[in-house]
Image (cartoon, rainbow, N blue to C red; front, side, top):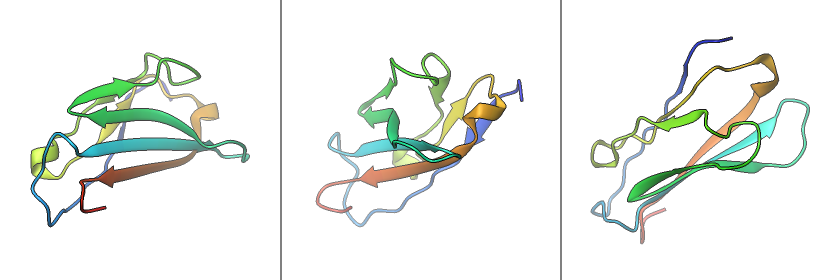
Length: 93
């Protein structure tokens, strides 16, 4: 609580990394409920502009090195839940 949390995500692809590579981070609260996209990356990072994670997510990844990690600033107990990292590098998924 109150520190920065690193959410690691690493990937491998058999296709060359291009600007078509997309990373999506989704979140579902611990008590269940709707999945929501909290971060999107395609050539540049697109942190969410809505919801509880607005202005708290930063991109730490380096897709050339197979890293799609993010950080959450000032985490609180209610952030607890399931975080899913999805990487698509067409035609490889």
